[in-house]
Length: 270
Image (tube, rainbow, N blue to C red):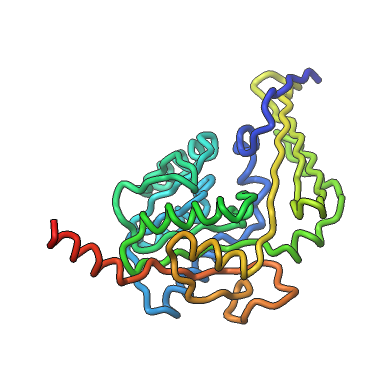
C-alpha cells in the first residue's frame, strides 16, 4: 500500500472529504428543532438565518428545507465545497460563503444567527469570542437573535487520553484525544488514510483540532463586549439552567432593539 504525506495540519482540509461519514450519528435535525424551540420561547420568528461555522451544511440544509432563507459561513473552503455539492443535489438555494467568524461581513442583515457543534470553542481566547459576537451583531437586524453552543470547561476536562479508530472501505481515521490542564484545551490529533483512484493506494493526512472550554461568565462577558444582550443560557438540549456539571451550554443573545431607534435618529440627522 503506497502512501503520500499531507504537508499541512490545518483543520478541515482532507478531513472534509470524510467528515459526514464520521459524524453520521450526530443529531443535526434535533438541533434545528431545538433552535426553533428557543426562538419560540422568546417570541422570535426569523426568516433569514446565518449559519456560522456551517461546515458541510448539516444544519444549513435542514433550516433551508424548513423554508428559511439561509446563508452559511465557514473559513474552510474544503468544507464549503462539500456543502455546495449537497445543496445542489438537494435543490436547496443556500448561499455558502468563505469567512472567518471573527471578521466576516454579511451581504444583508439576518434575523437569526446560529453557531453550533461547539464551533465557538475553536476560538481559544475570550477576546476572539467577543470579536465573533461583534461580527454577528453587525450581521443581525436590531432585535435579532444569536444562538450558539459551547462545550464547558467541565466537559473538556473529562476528556481522556484515548485513541479512536474509524474505518470504512475508502478510508481509515485514527483520532487521538488529549487534554492540557495548563491551557485548559482539548486537542484531537487526526491521522487519516484516504483511498484514491488507484487500487490499494492511500493518501495520508494529518490535522490538529483544539478547543477551549467556556463557562457562563466568560460567554456572557464576550457577548456583552461584542454589543449583544444575553437573554438566557441553558443546559443542552432543554431549558434547565446551567449547572456546575453541565457539559454543553446554549446561549441566546440579542442585538438590542434600541439600535433601531439609534439608526433612525442618525438617518434623520444625516
